[in-house]
Image (cartoon, rainbow, N blue to C red; front, side, top):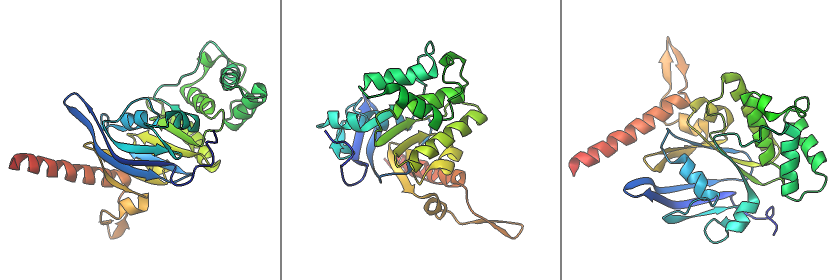
Length: 266
């Protein structure tokens, strides 16, 4: 199966719904992700970001709606989806007993790749881990461990990579290290869907940003397009463009007020 020849958007989501008993997590989510570049799904804790990623990676079934990844339907063509993607969760999935290089070689062998040692060395070099490659992963800093985790996810060159809150719990220096690794992914032509609750992360990395709130996508666009949702502020006669933080709280607050008003009418 050729997972690199599909046409159209890398990801297409239409009317996605998911509930856990009486809790409606997704209420009709719609978005598309173009091939290449970085798409950020931004939202608070509990907004449903991880649920979306789990559905797109075939780990969870939606209650309603459709989703296609690299041209494959997540419900009916799960094998094609799995061959097209890599998923990095909120916690680094590295074997701390093994060295960084041994972790990479192990995954390359599991994927039946030729010359797994060469694959490992190339990735160590790409993610600036060559000097640490022979050290046990248990000795790595948080940023190094995250970079190794992302490197492992690239073995086999998947066209689509899901990064679910990749910098959660990391210190500022480690976050910057991961950001640089993510930017390199996009430069290499990989499509990245990034979930995050950090406004500065979405502002730094994403080509397009969708804000997930109340189970729906309430805005979706480039940073420039989102900024145009709010008028610029003037500080001492100097025009100040709204930040992504200003946009986020304005649209989330407006949506929350609207839902409260509708609830009071019932």
